[in-house]
Length: 357
Image (cartoon, rainbow, N blue to C red; front, side):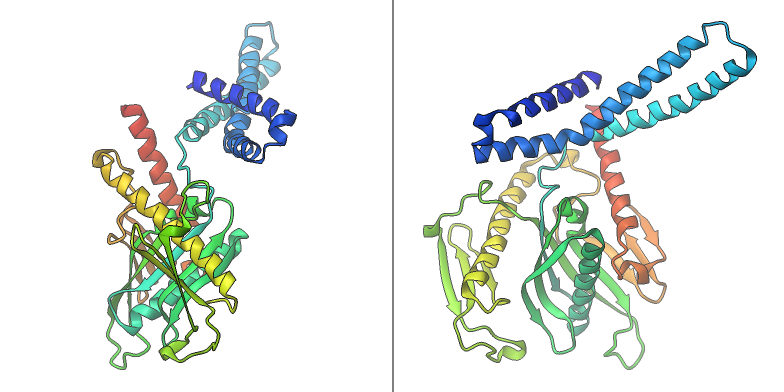
Protein backbone atom coordinates (compact mmCIF):
# COMPACT_ATOMS: atom_id res chain seq x y z
CA UNK A 1 0.00 0.00 0.00
CA UNK A 2 2.78 2.42 0.92
CA UNK A 3 4.58 1.88 -2.40
CA UNK A 4 1.37 2.79 -4.19
CA UNK A 5 0.88 5.87 -2.02
CA UNK A 6 4.45 7.01 -2.65
CA UNK A 7 3.91 6.53 -6.39
CA UNK A 8 0.77 8.69 -6.19
CA UNK A 9 2.67 11.42 -4.34
CA UNK A 10 5.51 11.30 -6.89
CA UNK A 11 2.99 11.65 -9.70
CA UNK A 12 1.40 14.62 -7.91
CA UNK A 13 4.78 16.37 -7.74
CA UNK A 14 5.42 15.61 -11.40
CA UNK A 15 2.04 17.10 -12.30
CA UNK A 16 2.98 20.25 -10.37
CA UNK A 17 6.03 20.57 -12.60
CA UNK A 18 4.04 19.91 -15.78
CA UNK A 19 1.40 22.49 -14.86
CA UNK A 20 4.14 25.11 -14.48
CA UNK A 21 5.61 24.30 -17.89
CA UNK A 22 4.79 27.15 -20.38
CA UNK A 23 4.33 24.59 -23.15
CA UNK A 24 1.60 22.82 -21.15
CA UNK A 25 0.01 26.10 -20.03
CA UNK A 26 -0.48 27.03 -23.69
CA UNK A 27 -1.95 23.63 -24.55
CA UNK A 28 -5.59 23.83 -23.39
CA UNK A 29 -6.25 20.09 -23.77
CA UNK A 30 -3.17 18.96 -21.80
CA UNK A 31 -3.65 21.68 -19.17
CA UNK A 32 -7.19 20.48 -18.57
CA UNK A 33 -6.16 16.82 -18.56
CA UNK A 34 -3.29 17.31 -16.07
CA UNK A 35 -5.31 19.66 -13.84
CA UNK A 36 -8.11 17.09 -13.65
CA UNK A 37 -5.65 14.30 -12.84
CA UNK A 38 -3.99 16.35 -10.12
CA UNK A 39 -7.34 17.30 -8.60
CA UNK A 40 -8.32 13.62 -8.60
CA UNK A 41 -5.34 12.55 -6.45
CA UNK A 42 -4.97 15.65 -4.26
CA UNK A 43 -7.06 14.27 -1.38
CA UNK A 44 -5.02 11.04 -1.36
CA UNK A 45 -1.71 12.94 -1.34
CA UNK A 46 -2.83 15.25 1.48
CA UNK A 47 -3.99 12.27 3.58
CA UNK A 48 -0.72 10.41 2.90
CA UNK A 49 1.36 13.43 3.94
CA UNK A 50 -0.69 13.78 7.11
CA UNK A 51 -0.22 10.06 7.76
CA UNK A 52 3.58 10.33 7.38
CA UNK A 53 3.66 13.31 9.75
CA UNK A 54 1.50 11.63 12.41
CA UNK A 55 3.42 8.35 12.12
CA UNK A 56 6.67 10.29 12.60
CA UNK A 57 5.26 11.90 15.75
CA UNK A 58 4.15 8.45 16.96
CA UNK A 59 7.62 6.97 16.44
CA UNK A 60 9.25 9.96 18.19
CA UNK A 61 6.92 9.55 21.16
CA UNK A 62 7.71 5.80 21.35
CA UNK A 63 11.41 6.64 21.32
CA UNK A 64 10.91 9.05 24.25
CA UNK A 65 9.78 6.15 26.42
CA UNK A 66 13.28 4.70 26.09
CA UNK A 67 14.66 7.81 27.82
CA UNK A 68 14.76 8.48 31.58
CA UNK A 69 11.51 10.25 32.36
CA UNK A 70 9.80 11.12 35.62
CA UNK A 71 6.47 9.39 36.31
CA UNK A 72 4.33 12.38 35.29
CA UNK A 73 6.15 12.89 31.96
CA UNK A 74 6.06 9.17 31.21
CA UNK A 75 2.30 9.13 31.74
CA UNK A 76 1.89 12.14 29.42
CA UNK A 77 3.95 10.45 26.71
CA UNK A 78 1.91 7.24 27.03
CA UNK A 79 -1.29 9.25 26.65
CA UNK A 80 0.08 10.98 23.56
CA UNK A 81 1.12 7.62 22.08
CA UNK A 82 -2.43 6.31 22.55
CA UNK A 83 -3.92 9.34 20.76
CA UNK A 84 -1.38 9.16 17.92
CA UNK A 85 -1.97 5.42 17.53
CA UNK A 86 -5.70 6.07 17.04
CA UNK A 87 -4.94 8.76 14.44
CA UNK A 88 -2.52 6.46 12.58
CA UNK A 89 -5.15 3.68 12.44
CA UNK A 90 -7.86 6.10 11.26
CA UNK A 91 -5.59 7.51 8.54
CA UNK A 92 -4.59 4.01 7.39
CA UNK A 93 -8.27 3.08 7.04
CA UNK A 94 -8.94 6.29 5.12
CA UNK A 95 -5.98 5.72 2.80
CA UNK A 96 -7.20 2.21 1.97
CA UNK A 97 -10.51 3.70 0.84
CA UNK A 98 -8.79 6.50 -1.10
CA UNK A 99 -6.74 3.90 -2.98
CA UNK A 100 -9.88 2.13 -4.23
CA UNK A 101 -10.06 2.79 -8.00
CA UNK A 102 -12.51 5.62 -8.54
CA UNK A 103 -15.43 5.50 -10.94
CA UNK A 104 -14.25 7.80 -13.77
CA UNK A 105 -17.73 9.32 -13.88
CA UNK A 106 -17.92 10.27 -10.19
CA UNK A 107 -17.08 13.95 -10.62
CA UNK A 108 -19.55 14.50 -13.45
CA UNK A 109 -22.91 16.22 -13.67
CA UNK A 110 -25.87 13.87 -14.01
CA UNK A 111 -28.85 13.59 -16.28
CA UNK A 112 -31.80 12.06 -14.44
CA UNK A 113 -34.85 10.59 -16.12
CA UNK A 114 -37.90 9.81 -13.98
CA UNK A 115 -40.92 8.04 -15.44
CA UNK A 116 -44.21 6.98 -13.89
CA UNK A 117 -44.50 3.20 -14.33
CA UNK A 118 -47.17 0.93 -12.84
CA UNK A 119 -50.07 2.76 -11.23
CA UNK A 120 -51.46 5.33 -13.67
CA UNK A 121 -52.05 8.79 -12.18
CA UNK A 122 -50.65 7.70 -8.82
CA UNK A 123 -47.37 6.60 -10.47
CA UNK A 124 -47.16 10.00 -12.18
CA UNK A 125 -47.73 11.77 -8.85
CA UNK A 126 -44.98 9.67 -7.30
CA UNK A 127 -42.64 10.57 -10.18
CA UNK A 128 -43.30 14.21 -9.26
CA UNK A 129 -42.48 13.49 -5.62
CA UNK A 130 -39.17 11.91 -6.63
CA UNK A 131 -38.30 14.86 -8.88
CA UNK A 132 -38.92 17.32 -6.02
CA UNK A 133 -36.92 15.10 -3.63
CA UNK A 134 -33.86 15.12 -5.91
CA UNK A 135 -34.26 18.85 -6.64
CA UNK A 136 -34.24 19.66 -2.92
CA UNK A 137 -31.27 17.38 -2.32
CA UNK A 138 -29.40 19.13 -5.16
CA UNK A 139 -30.27 22.53 -3.69
CA UNK A 140 -28.83 21.57 -0.28
CA UNK A 141 -25.63 20.38 -2.01
CA UNK A 142 -25.32 23.73 -3.80
CA UNK A 143 -26.00 22.13 -7.20
CA UNK A 144 -28.13 23.56 -10.00
CA UNK A 145 -31.10 21.73 -11.55
CA UNK A 146 -32.21 22.38 -15.12
CA UNK A 147 -35.27 20.69 -16.67
CA UNK A 148 -34.74 19.34 -20.19
CA UNK A 149 -38.14 17.83 -20.94
CA UNK A 150 -41.29 17.27 -18.90
CA UNK A 151 -44.54 15.53 -19.74
CA UNK A 152 -46.94 16.54 -16.97
CA UNK A 153 -50.37 15.15 -16.11
CA UNK A 154 -53.54 16.96 -15.19
CA UNK A 155 -53.30 15.73 -11.58
CA UNK A 156 -49.94 17.40 -10.90
CA UNK A 157 -47.50 14.59 -11.61
CA UNK A 158 -45.22 13.62 -14.47
CA UNK A 159 -45.46 10.81 -16.99
CA UNK A 160 -41.80 11.63 -17.64
CA UNK A 161 -39.37 14.32 -16.56
CA UNK A 162 -35.74 14.66 -17.68
CA UNK A 163 -33.38 17.10 -15.99
CA UNK A 164 -29.69 17.85 -15.52
CA UNK A 165 -28.08 18.33 -12.12
CA UNK A 166 -24.92 20.40 -12.43
CA UNK A 167 -22.53 20.00 -9.51
CA UNK A 168 -19.11 18.59 -8.68
CA UNK A 169 -19.44 14.96 -7.59
CA UNK A 170 -23.15 14.78 -8.44
CA UNK A 171 -22.83 11.38 -10.12
CA UNK A 172 -20.86 9.92 -7.20
CA UNK A 173 -23.83 10.52 -4.89
CA UNK A 174 -26.76 9.94 -7.22
CA UNK A 175 -25.61 6.94 -9.26
CA UNK A 176 -27.19 4.51 -6.78
CA UNK A 177 -30.67 5.94 -7.49
CA UNK A 178 -30.85 3.93 -10.74
CA UNK A 179 -33.75 1.51 -10.67
CA UNK A 180 -37.44 1.05 -9.84
CA UNK A 181 -38.80 2.97 -6.84
CA UNK A 182 -42.00 1.72 -5.22
CA UNK A 183 -44.53 3.73 -3.21
CA UNK A 184 -47.19 2.38 -0.85
CA UNK A 185 -49.86 4.90 0.18
CA UNK A 186 -53.53 5.87 -0.05
CA UNK A 187 -53.79 7.87 -3.29
CA UNK A 188 -55.42 11.32 -3.22
CA UNK A 189 -57.75 10.04 -5.95
CA UNK A 190 -58.84 7.00 -3.87
CA UNK A 191 -62.05 7.66 -1.91
CA UNK A 192 -62.10 4.23 -0.28
CA UNK A 193 -58.91 4.79 1.69
CA UNK A 194 -57.19 1.65 0.42
CA UNK A 195 -53.39 1.51 0.20
CA UNK A 196 -52.12 1.27 -3.37
CA UNK A 197 -48.71 0.24 -4.64
CA UNK A 198 -47.26 2.18 -7.58
CA UNK A 199 -43.82 2.46 -9.13
CA UNK A 200 -41.64 4.96 -10.94
CA UNK A 201 -38.32 4.31 -12.63
CA UNK A 202 -35.23 6.46 -12.24
CA UNK A 203 -32.30 6.48 -14.68
CA UNK A 204 -29.10 8.31 -13.74
CA UNK A 205 -26.67 9.02 -16.57
CA UNK A 206 -23.29 10.77 -16.29
CA UNK A 207 -23.13 13.81 -18.54
CA UNK A 208 -20.70 12.88 -21.31
CA UNK A 209 -18.25 15.41 -22.70
CA UNK A 210 -17.56 15.77 -26.40
CA UNK A 211 -14.03 14.43 -25.97
CA UNK A 212 -15.40 11.20 -24.45
CA UNK A 213 -17.89 10.33 -27.14
CA UNK A 214 -17.82 11.60 -30.68
CA UNK A 215 -21.18 11.97 -32.40
CA UNK A 216 -21.02 12.98 -36.06
CA UNK A 217 -23.56 15.37 -37.58
CA UNK A 218 -24.22 12.85 -40.38
CA UNK A 219 -25.39 10.35 -37.75
CA UNK A 220 -28.06 12.66 -36.34
CA UNK A 221 -31.48 13.40 -37.81
CA UNK A 222 -32.92 16.70 -36.57
CA UNK A 223 -36.70 17.26 -36.56
CA UNK A 224 -38.37 20.47 -35.40
CA UNK A 225 -41.96 20.95 -34.27
CA UNK A 226 -44.15 23.33 -32.30
CA UNK A 227 -44.03 22.95 -28.51
CA UNK A 228 -47.11 21.48 -26.89
CA UNK A 229 -48.57 21.55 -23.40
CA UNK A 230 -50.71 19.12 -21.38
CA UNK A 231 -53.26 17.37 -23.57
CA UNK A 232 -51.32 18.14 -26.70
CA UNK A 233 -52.54 21.72 -27.17
CA UNK A 234 -50.08 24.00 -28.98
CA UNK A 235 -48.42 26.50 -26.67
CA UNK A 236 -45.91 27.85 -29.17
CA UNK A 237 -46.62 28.70 -32.78
CA UNK A 238 -42.92 28.69 -33.71
CA UNK A 239 -41.05 25.48 -34.52
CA UNK A 240 -38.84 25.72 -31.42
CA UNK A 241 -39.10 22.13 -30.16
CA UNK A 242 -36.36 19.78 -31.31
CA UNK A 243 -36.17 15.99 -31.72
CA UNK A 244 -32.76 14.39 -32.28
CA UNK A 245 -32.36 10.81 -33.52
CA UNK A 246 -28.97 9.10 -33.34
CA UNK A 247 -29.24 6.83 -36.36
CA UNK A 248 -26.55 4.20 -35.45
CA UNK A 249 -28.17 3.40 -32.08
CA UNK A 250 -31.76 4.53 -32.64
CA UNK A 251 -31.56 6.80 -29.59
CA UNK A 252 -34.21 9.57 -29.67
CA UNK A 253 -34.27 12.73 -27.54
CA UNK A 254 -36.81 15.58 -27.61
CA UNK A 255 -36.62 18.98 -25.93
CA UNK A 256 -39.19 21.77 -25.91
CA UNK A 257 -38.53 23.41 -22.55
CA UNK A 258 -36.89 26.54 -24.03
CA UNK A 259 -38.47 29.07 -26.41
CA UNK A 260 -35.31 29.06 -28.51
CA UNK A 261 -34.74 26.22 -30.98
CA UNK A 262 -30.96 26.61 -30.54
CA UNK A 263 -31.19 26.21 -26.75
CA UNK A 264 -33.51 23.22 -27.10
CA UNK A 265 -31.06 21.59 -29.50
CA UNK A 266 -28.15 22.20 -27.08
CA UNK A 267 -30.08 20.62 -24.22
CA UNK A 268 -31.23 17.69 -26.35
CA UNK A 269 -27.66 17.13 -27.49
CA UNK A 270 -26.48 16.83 -23.88
CA UNK A 271 -29.06 14.12 -23.20
CA UNK A 272 -28.33 12.35 -26.49
CA UNK A 273 -24.60 12.27 -25.80
CA UNK A 274 -25.22 10.94 -22.27
CA UNK A 275 -27.60 8.21 -23.48
CA UNK A 276 -25.26 7.01 -26.23
CA UNK A 277 -22.33 7.07 -23.78
CA UNK A 278 -24.44 5.14 -21.25
CA UNK A 279 -25.44 2.58 -23.90
CA UNK A 280 -21.78 1.83 -24.63
CA UNK A 281 -21.06 1.62 -20.89
CA UNK A 282 -23.99 -0.74 -20.32
CA UNK A 283 -22.73 -3.02 -23.11
CA UNK A 284 -19.24 -3.05 -21.60
CA UNK A 285 -20.69 -3.74 -18.13
CA UNK A 286 -22.66 -6.70 -19.51
CA UNK A 287 -19.38 -8.29 -20.52
CA UNK A 288 -17.92 -7.79 -17.07
CA UNK A 289 -17.75 -10.82 -14.79
CA UNK A 290 -20.98 -10.85 -12.76
CA UNK A 291 -19.21 -12.27 -9.72
CA UNK A 292 -16.99 -9.21 -9.43
CA UNK A 293 -19.75 -6.62 -9.52
CA UNK A 294 -20.26 -4.29 -6.58
CA UNK A 295 -22.77 -5.62 -4.06
CA UNK A 296 -24.81 -2.46 -4.47
CA UNK A 297 -24.99 -2.40 -8.26
CA UNK A 298 -26.09 0.51 -10.41
CA UNK A 299 -26.83 -1.06 -13.76
CA UNK A 300 -30.15 -2.89 -13.83
CA UNK A 301 -32.93 -0.33 -14.12
CA UNK A 302 -35.66 -2.92 -13.78
CA UNK A 303 -34.39 -3.80 -10.30
CA UNK A 304 -36.68 -2.67 -7.46
CA UNK A 305 -34.28 -0.78 -5.25
CA UNK A 306 -36.40 1.12 -2.72
CA UNK A 307 -39.85 1.24 -1.14
CA UNK A 308 -41.48 4.38 0.27
CA UNK A 309 -44.20 3.39 2.75
CA UNK A 310 -46.33 6.40 3.71
CA UNK A 311 -48.58 4.84 6.43
CA UNK A 312 -45.48 3.87 8.46
CA UNK A 313 -43.31 6.86 7.42
CA UNK A 314 -40.75 4.27 6.33
CA UNK A 315 -38.15 4.03 3.56
CA UNK A 316 -36.44 0.70 2.83
CA UNK A 317 -33.49 0.26 0.50
CA UNK A 318 -33.68 -3.39 -0.51
CA UNK A 319 -30.09 -3.69 -1.78
CA UNK A 320 -28.48 -3.16 1.61
CA UNK A 321 -31.40 -3.95 3.92
CA UNK A 322 -31.56 -0.38 5.26
CA UNK A 323 -34.84 0.77 6.83
CA UNK A 324 -35.35 4.35 8.06
CA UNK A 325 -38.47 5.78 9.71
CA UNK A 326 -37.94 9.22 8.17
CA UNK A 327 -39.93 9.19 4.93
CA UNK A 328 -41.19 12.76 5.44
CA UNK A 329 -37.60 14.06 5.81
CA UNK A 330 -36.25 12.02 2.90
CA UNK A 331 -38.92 13.39 0.55
CA UNK A 332 -37.72 16.86 1.60
CA UNK A 333 -34.34 15.99 0.10
CA UNK A 334 -32.58 14.75 3.24
CA UNK A 335 -31.07 11.76 1.46
CA UNK A 336 -27.61 11.80 3.04
CA UNK A 337 -28.21 8.93 5.47
CA UNK A 338 -29.32 6.63 2.63
CA UNK A 339 -26.65 7.74 0.16
CA UNK A 340 -23.83 7.53 2.74
CA UNK A 341 -24.88 3.96 3.62
CA UNK A 342 -24.85 2.96 -0.07
CA UNK A 343 -21.41 4.52 -0.60
CA UNK A 344 -20.07 2.73 2.49
CA UNK A 345 -21.47 -0.59 1.25
CA UNK A 346 -19.81 -0.11 -2.13
CA UNK A 347 -16.48 0.80 -0.50
CA UNK A 348 -16.64 -2.25 1.78
CA UNK A 349 -17.35 -4.53 -1.19
CA UNK A 350 -14.44 -3.07 -3.15
CA UNK A 351 -12.06 -3.36 -0.16
CA UNK A 352 -13.07 -7.01 0.24
CA UNK A 353 -12.59 -7.59 -3.48
CA UNK A 354 -9.12 -6.01 -3.31
CA UNK A 355 -8.12 -8.14 -0.30
CA UNK A 356 -9.40 -11.33 -1.95
CA UNK A 357 -7.55 -10.62 -5.20
